[in-house]
Length: 128
Image 1: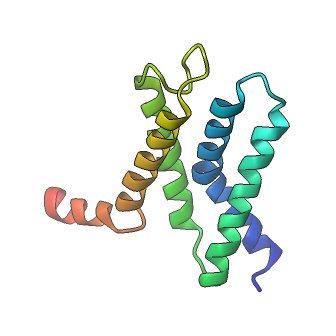
Image 2 (image 1 turned 135 degrees about the vertical axis):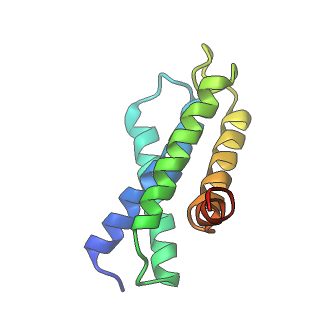
């Protein structure tokens, strides 16, 4: 079993990617006027569950790629919602399906660029 410090580090690094996406979907489904504890609590529980699954499979997981992944998902997700009229910034709270789709696309792009080594491939091939 990994240490509490490792679990918290992975949980907080996943909070930027998993947590933000789950929180935005909960806000879109329930509405922007629900208690903030509901969306934040759901986001932290989701991040903790994903962290526990990851650490169970890879106990020596390095958190640096997870932080890069999380920041990139966060930036792409915010940019996608800013460019979409039915995103999280819509007056009625936005479409939960569109918000979930933007989150999945942001996570897929971030995964390809960070975890799967796409950035290194681009650096070597294009900038080489």
